Structures are given as C-alpha cells and as structure tokens.
Amino acid sequence: MHIPKNELPAGGLDPAIAYQIVHDELMLDGNARLNLATFVTTWMEPTADKLMAECFDKNMIDKDEYPRTAELEARCVRMLAGLWNAPSTHEAPGCSTTGSSEACMLAGLAMKRRWRHRGGKGKPNLVMGINVQVCWEKFANYWDVEARLVPMDGDRFHLSAEEAVKLCDENTIGVVAILGSTFDGSYEPVEEICQALDELQAKTGLDIPVHVDGASGAMIAPFCDPDLRWDFRLPRVASINTSGHKYGLVYPGVGWVVWRDTAALPDDLVFQVNYLGGTMPTFALNFSRPGSQVVTQYYNFLRLGFDGYRRVQQSCRDIATSLAGQIAELGPFRLLTRGDQLPVFAFTVADGQPFSVFDVSNGLRARGWQVPAYTFPANRTDLAVLRIVVRNGFSLDLADALLTDLKQMLPALSTLEHARQGPVSFAHGT
Image (cartoon, rainbow, N blue to C red; front, side):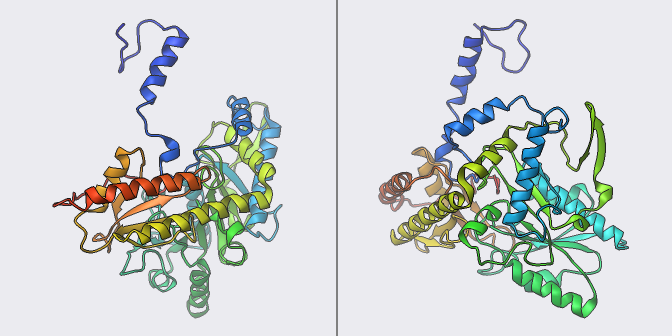
C-alpha cells in the first residue's frame, strides 16, 4: 500500500496500521536517554507519566473550567518564589510558560516597559554575554531592543561584572546574567554584577535591574549551592526564569518566570480576559497550551521535596565531576569546566593530537551517543569543544559505558592523519 508522506491521504487507515507506520519511522530517531547534548528531561517516574496522561486534555489557559489546575500553577509559583528567596511568596507574581524562551521574552518585556515608565527615550538596549541562549537575541530582534553582547576573551567564557558595566547607559533596560552557561556549564557572577551596578548607580544615578536566566541553574543552585547569592536576596535582581523541563525534572515543555514583587511587573502588561465563563488575568505570549506539564511539576515538588531535589541534583553533579575527571585522565583531552556548577562540562582535544573534537563526536554517535562538538562564539571562535550534560536518569553505569566507548575509540583516532573540521549542527540550550 502506498502511504503519501506529503499530502493528506484520500482515505483513512486502521489505527493499528497508522500507529505502526509512525512508530517504525520514529525508531530511526536517536535514543533520548543517550542524548548528552540536551538539557531537557528524558525520564520521569511511571506515576508522573500516568498523571501527565490524565491531564493531556486540559487547557492551561482555561482557568475557569480547570480551577484546580490553575491553583496548582499558582502553588508552583509560590514554591519557586520561596526557593528563590523572594521578599514575599504571596506578593511575587509569576506564571508558567511553554519553556524558558517564553519566560525570557516576558521578563524582557517587563524590563523594557519599566524603563519606558521611568521616562526612557530613544532605542533601549539590553546588556548580556555573547553566550546567552538564542531566545535573548530573538527578544532583542522582535521587540526592537539593541542587544549589547559582551564577547568572550581568553579564558573568560561568560559575562563579567566589569564588562557588563562598560556597556550600560541611560537606555539600558537591564542586564541579563546567566546562571549556567550552555556553552560550558559555568555560572555567571550574579552578585558581582549586581554590586558593580550598585556602584554605577551611586556614581551616575542609573538604576539598572538584573534578570537572572536560570534556565538550568535556578533548579541546581538552591539545592547544591545554598550559600551562593544569586537570587532575590540581591535587591537588584528583578526577575528569574527557569525551565521546568530541564532540571525541574518535567518532560517538555514548561518554564517559569517569577518577579520579586508586583512593582517589578507593570500592571499594563497584564490582561484581564473574559473567557469561557470567567475573567482572569493573563501575562503570556501563548494562549491555549496543555496543563499536564504544570500538573507534573507540582507532582515533582510534592514527590521529591527540597531534600529529594537536592539528592537528585547532587547526584547529577557527582556523576558529572567524576566523569570529567576520568576523561581528563585519559590524556588526549583538556577540561574547560569540571561539572561542579551545572552538572555539565566542556572539554577540548589537547594540543598535538591528530584528531579533532568533531572526529570524537562522530565516533561516539556511531556508538549511539549524542555528544555535541562546536566552536565558541566571538572572540573565541578558534576554540572547538565537546560538551556533556548529565541529567536525572544518566546513571554511573551509563557514564562508565560512555567512558569505555571513548577509551575504545582512542587507538583508531590516534591514527588519523587529517582531523575533520567543521561543527556538528547543534542548538544551545536545548
């Protein structure tokens, strides 16, 4: 039977046949559990899977018809506000989103609107490191904001306080600090950036807020680095986002954004919508979307609690640092980071080796592993690296299997005469 692939079939199929056709084609995808490129959750407990399936048909926007789902969303916001040390968990506005990209867009819009309310004129700008996720460049493009990107320099692979302040002026709507760079897993110095902006305000009067893009780190640092000051304990931090579908441990896609207080979220960005029998406030780019991820986020918060999240995240970090150390001991590789901030580390091929990071990535892919190889952005385009993300479900046994495969590849790699050049196609922050 001929099944058209690019046009609607004239007639239907038996459900079992349609399922088998789709199922068989998807077998050619990579194994999600062996995808060490992605930050996105690839494993949840069977009870979470069941709960998610029970909520597939619930529309998150329809809070009047699904009031308990809406309540669970509000509870999650309050839990995150408390986790991030907001002055008042009940007065810190926030919402769920489809992921960190939407959350960042909302935080950026709030910064731009607050700047306008303060009398800002001319073209607004946003200061950030060149290592930011592409959603920030999209925000700047879509909402007509100048993106002031601080390039990498030498061994500095992310934004520094000194470089951030240099680019700030009266048209700066905010500074974005990344708690966990996707390029190498390192934290940006949020407290130092805030202190530098405090000093700038004392000298010039410029009051520039900070948004913390904690897509990954905002669900790592509270549990593994409780003494690190990066959140609402710093008065200059106006808003924080995270990806529930990354280290929030939920399948894609759900994100969260929380503002420190109602003053940080301008009222004129919040819409009152009369929809399906009820009036509700909404501040989001998307309208209809599933409630299942929000429900399972709440499930995870109840199921794990603070201590459970701490154990999961610390286990990921322990596996990352152990694996990084063992890769360094092999000899042909040089670590850039060790996985001791985000459970993520980057490494490159040591000088004098006859192979490149791209050869290593291809060799691992042939064995089922997806380990991205890529070059860094300006001004370190000369540096090509491999990056490994350790997530919940990536066990010590899997780490040992990866290391064994890497060791077995080295004799063949050492005989290469011409290392392959060119990055593997790869999107940061996925």
